[in-house]
Image 1 (cartoon, rainbow, N blue to C red):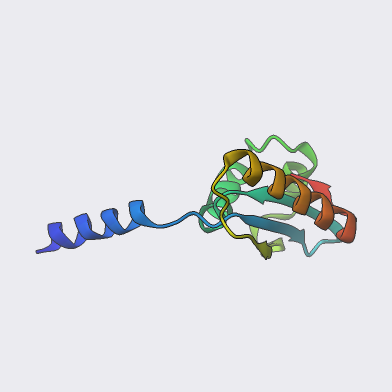
Image 2 (image 1 turned 90 degrees about the vertical axis):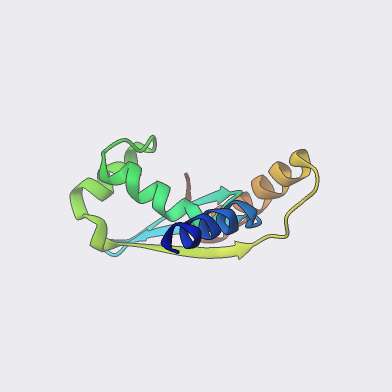
Length: 112
């Protein structure tokens, strides 16, 4: 029975629809610092970010330095905007890029 539950959970996970959007990271120790990024998968981006930051492998040096200095407990993840999925990959990328630029300007944030 448990094997069937696992298979059903995996099948449901594969069927889920990706939800694109814009997110922000904030560090309590650096209240004026905000990092904003776009993602085609809001439901998985936080885990990917935390994993790369915990292992010291994030490509954004400033973000990695803040994480290393202040630790995971100082950081919060926030969904700024959820977007409707686009049929066209080109339109999806353009929409994410445009909305991320909007939020970076509005929050005076750095790009991730």
